[in-house]
Picture 1: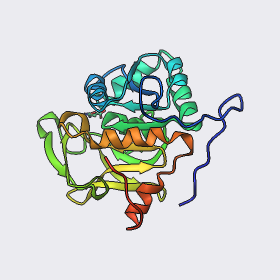
Picture 2: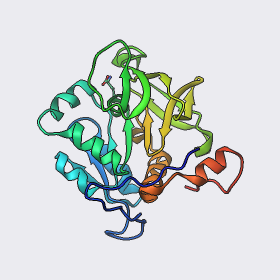
Picture 3: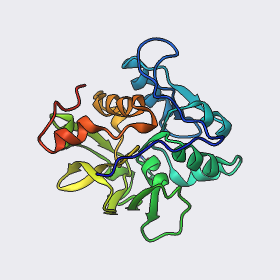
Picture 4: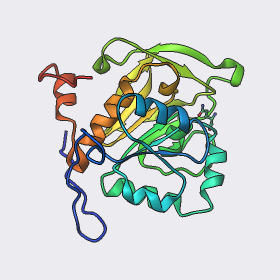
Length: 236
Ligand code: GLN
């Protein structure tokens, strides 16, 4: 895979990678807190020793290295985002190397195409996603996701979940459920069609913090080496 050099920050500065370990020294993590399941994500991050900030204003993105966009309702989220230049500043955040993790509605927001609808999205993840693809709320379910790089299968909650219909060539499928991709990564973007914050398994959040720790130069060499059957692999 092509390495992913640091994008210059607006103003020409490059961000030095930050590393975990003590107040103020870890990656600056935020959870988008406009709508949806942000509190549960923040709770998982705290449980694993991070100090997330709940982000309610687009201008606050400039102080972060990584952001979780939680599940909820993508149309509601988009409406709430109209009050501030969220789209512009989220795209800028991504360009300067910020890591993004979208879960469920968050994955919909990240995707480039929404199947069968013209719905606004950030378009940062080269994927086509279909909303509510398993049916209604009552068709929500818990299922194990096969994600070999994380170790044993991950219990995941699918709540009015979307489905990836197609992913681009630079998108790695990290997890599948019944053979279908449900967890993907494109460089510093991770997207899951399920809610990893609800089932008590924090491996995916640990993975994301690791990604954020690498700063904007990270290309997850251990991760790739492991996928190729080489190097030591990521430890959680
Ligand atoms: N059905 C929601 C949507 O289309 C997503 C559901 C969720 O985030 N749990 O936005």
